[in-house]
Length: 311
Image 1 (cartoon, rainbow, N blue to C red):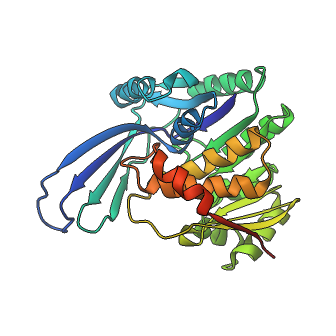
Image 2 (cartoon, rainbow, N blue to C red; image 1 turned 180 degrees about the horizontal axis):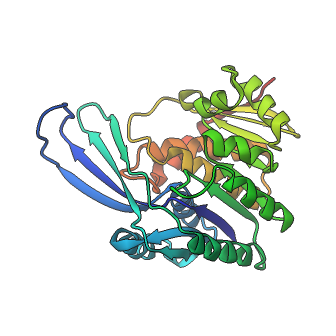
């Protein structure tokens, strides 16, 4: 089993419009709603890949109820266990506006509900119980922190996972990532901007090595059109996609996290994990909504991904 933690879950709403023009009224061609938040997206992709996954974090209000109903109805829901903790505040929404003429996506992310001390205590009890369950292969700590939780929250959760002997991946940014590094997560998955903000280095390989010096045991950095770079004890590799693909990039990084976790659970070598992550990210860009990927595109792209030792 793999655990995904999403402290700031969301109901993802995607609008498709012919074009996006500021200061005008738009006719929406299509509306899609999906259960979201980074860890929820990761869990949905893991289930599609055949891995049993437990989703935890917070859900509240009418939006939270809709999220949980939608989560129970996703494909491969038999592989997903809902362990979300109820809260009084309402789960946020994220709105993606996709322009048909350009393929560009504009995002609007609400901040999320404040978490009360008693709600946080209930989550910690559930988190510890999940870490102690039989057959747990990994835990992923994903996304932003909701109001009311300190920036050192992920550092504490990383330490608890390591104390339980569970492999832990951290996918966040800013000060929560900086603090989380001190707890020595097994893997961090920043994008290039997050990695530069963390280390001050613009060159990805130098930044990744610096992130390891700061505490990460391994780094897998998403580099956009340049694919993904992995730096760890076993070596350094870069995986390149075969071609740039137009589409909705929302959730592409979450699919990469799912591929990395699946690769760990299946004990794949790093080059194979990277190839899967890049191909799955690209196939997600071609899908209509986050938490999904184009299966046909994934099968075609995977053998075309180039992976080479770097550094």
